[in-house]
Structure formats: C-alpha cells, structure tokens
Image 1 (cartoon, rainbow, N blue to C red):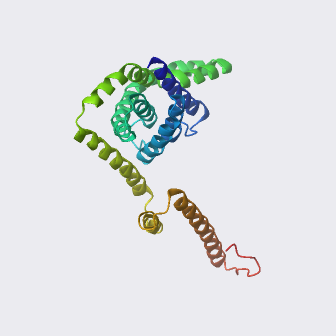
Image 2: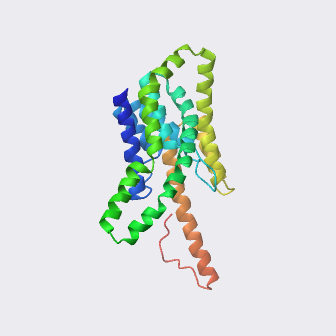
Image 3: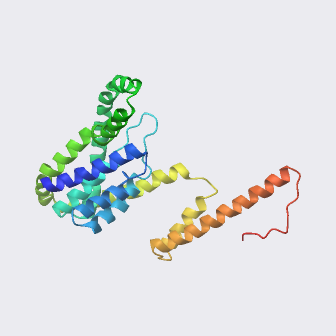
Length: 264
C-alpha cells in the first residue's frame, strides 16, 4: 500500500506541479490523472472508465467568485486508487469522489493564508535581482509547496486507509451499495446538467434533443454521435461565418460577390 500511495502521490505532484509551472495545461483534469493512476496501479481499463465518468462529474464545476469547488484532481486519484486496490466496483469509487474532493478543496483553502504569508519573501527575492535563484525557487514551490497538505493527506489516505475502507465495504448491507451505485450515476448526470446550464441558449438547445434521440431511440454509439455532432458544428460555424460576412457587407453598402465559390 505504501508503494501504491507513493505512485499516486507522484501523479498528484507531477500533474499539479507541471500545471503550476507551465501554466494551466489541463493536466490536473480527471481524464488525465485518473488514467495515469490506473496505469501506474496496473489497471488502466478501470482508470480510463472512471476517468471519463469523473470528467463528466467535475466538468461543470469551477471556482467562481468566493466559491470553493471540490478538488477534482485529488478526488480522482484517491477514488481510482480505492476502486483498484480494494477491488470495489467503479460505481462505488465514483460515489466516493465528491466527498473526498470537497474535503481536499477545503484543505487547500486553509493552506492559502500560509502561502500568502510568504509574499514578502518573494517580493524581496524578486527585488534582489537574483533571477536564476528566483526562477528555481518558484519552480520548487509550484512543484512541492503549493499543494503540500493535499500531498500528505493523499499519501496517508491510500497508504493506511485502503485496508480500513476495504473492511467497511465488505460489511456494508447490499442496499447501501446499491444506493452508492445510484448516487454515482446521478452525479454524472448532475455534472452534465451543471455544464449545460452554463452554455444553454435557444440557438443550440435543439442539438441537445437531437443527441438524446440519436442515443435513446436510434441506439447509436457515443463515437457515432460525436462524429455527427462534430460535422454539424463545422457546418454551423462556417454558415454563421458566411452570414456575418454578408451582413457586414450589407451594412457597409457593398454588394455580395457571386463569383466566389461557396463553402457549402
């Protein structure tokens, strides 16, 4: 368990650190971290399945204003590790993700005053003109100090908590396990609902129902629906672009050329 915990902590440190040092490259998203965790723990299939579901759950959750969202990265790593190491099903692992992420998100908020207290030190170091020293310390802080509490909690939870969780899951009544499975399925739907609520408008709302019909009544696989949606998006984009060009010419009093070949 200690070895597995070290591997999971390495995934956390590397993905979070690279995102801090290189700018936000989305390496800390569940689709990346859960897959890496499954690969390092020897069950990439479970990692990829949970990665897709966790990404759907956390896709529409973001820090807006003073809100404290759940930590999608840490919760994905711990949920995948628990599912693989305890032999639990995917649904149980998904049900654990949200409460774990909420806890670790609160831990990060409590760590921020410590980071803020280091501001005078960084200001003095920047004013000293020691560019190389400043750069190396910023990289080191981004890799190790910025997320230190979550790293410790993540390691301890996997190294010493998996056996306890396995024992608890073994004695749980069937109806509780069924409830966890139902809850994990609902969270995926809620994640999509949060995302749709932010991008929904009357112009593109019809595509949601088209996708529902293709999936529910025509039983098309997800890849086929994605390809159809991609083709529709391309047509929609170029059509809107052409309409905007025509509108701009009309507003300027120009004439639309009929010699240019239309895209569609």
